[in-house]
Amino acid sequence: MKKLLLFLSVLFISHLSFGQTVNLTAENGLELNQSKKTLSAIKNAKIERGDMTLTADKIIAYYKEDAKKQPQIYKVEAIGDVQITSAKERIETKKVTYNLETGQMELTGSPTTRLYYDDIVLSSPNTIKYNHIKGIAVATDGQIKQGKRILSSKTMTAYFEKIDGKFGLSKAEATGGVKLTTETEELTGDNAIYDAKSGFAKITNSVSIKRGNQATLDGGLLEYNMKTGITRLHPKKGETQIHGTFNTTDKATPMIEGAIEKDKL
Image (cartoon, rainbow, N blue to C red; front, side, top):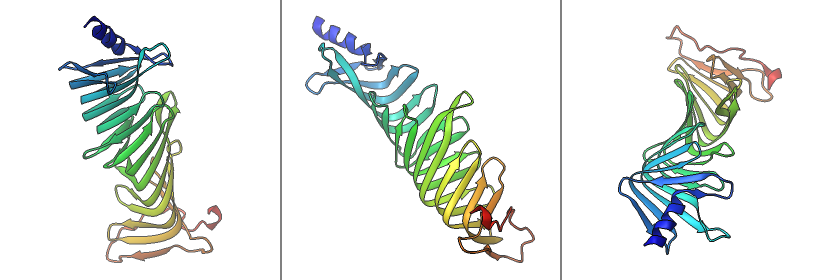
């Protein structure tokens, strides 16, 4: 019994090879499985590591022994109402597998996984693979929401870094079925790159703008400023004109700036 208690106490304060401490607690206590090398925490489970706190209905911590035969927690699985908070981000999901050594997380939402960064939210109803050390997230059927403007695609890769003293989105790459929804327009294309610093989202290949029943415009390159709401549509390569269909019964017309700027393609 004394050996078991000593073993558990070492796991509660487990120093990994790079010197960070892992603390694991739960309302219904902890269950040790030495054959599987797991430590399970059930009901209001919480794990703390550095400035990161992870809470869930259930947490399973996996451990291995180092050269000195000391147990080291290297992986964590959390299930049910998962909440992760740190100085960098806030995450909501249903299930997460987290490798403490590499910083890699696999987040599975039900119905949705959300990563919050200041005024920007990255979300997906499917899977987000996120490395919080490298600051890279890859979302399947992902979307980035900033205010009322939403950029979505089949695959969304987001890059995060410290900007002006705060950790936030620096760039996003969207591929497949790109759609940017604003307060008044729907912008579509095959691919997009969003630069959070400048606020510009550039959409390429089969781009179009739809504004209610008023107009549909097609071009080769579409630029949208997420900060100002200004849209700029350029002609397709080799062309000098924008192709559009307008509803003449509507008095309003789309707010398009620089509709023919071939030299900027």
